[in-house]
Image (cartoon, rainbow, N blue to C red):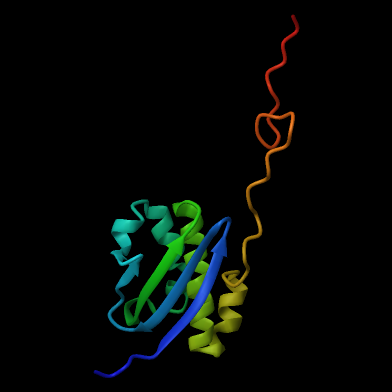
Length: 131
């Protein structure tokens, strides 16, 4: 059995982490050993993940295996997008200017704000009672 060349990268978003492996194939995507469409039922999440692949026209040429953990499905989709973009740059460094210009190599720094004492949530106050 011949070994396929793999390109691995890690993506993060909110509290989600995605470890992504790219290899040549027919365009199959597996997330946590489950088919891509089954793991991400929401169409918007699937579109987010496919953005870097469609930018460089590699969607039908690559198989993707990803392990996602932490956070919710939207955070995991964003983490996968970053991981795929980083793996594409490892695979072909000449794609870096194109992917960087599209903003896919930038880690989204927005995260949940911590809860403060004396508040219901981070900024929400308890209901004021006059009497």
